[in-house]
Image (cartoon, rainbow, N blue to C red; front, side, top):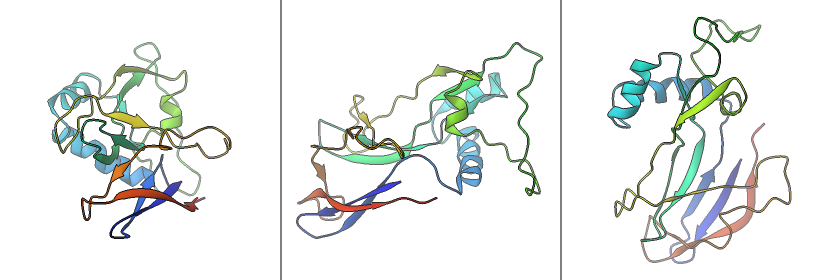
Length: 175
């Protein structure tokens, strides 16, 4: 799901994406490779070395810095491990028409009894370095009426730096 915002000054449009989409298996594969290469820090790289069956939450989120009003979209990157006893395995079957099994764990799986969270990723503001950025929650699909934490936040425009982004009436849902 995506919400569209428009700058009050330059009219640049921005999309705030929430969750995952159809391309998630290949996105997850790329993201895990970047983690193993150290792009998101040595700690995640070490966690994968220590827990080879570990998984990261690759769902896309919007993070907001109350200090400088900057925002960025990035994967969650929380680290999970299987909750089963060692030696057991989670039965993850491939789709019937899929030619291969991808090393991908969907966020919904991670937030089930099959996995347990062992490390929350500490996001920082890429603009000012503030370590108290806030993860914003959009109204999840199928849960109309649940308030979005994006409401009432003033997002600076990345394009012109002068205006603020205002939510349009447009929302994009991709099935």
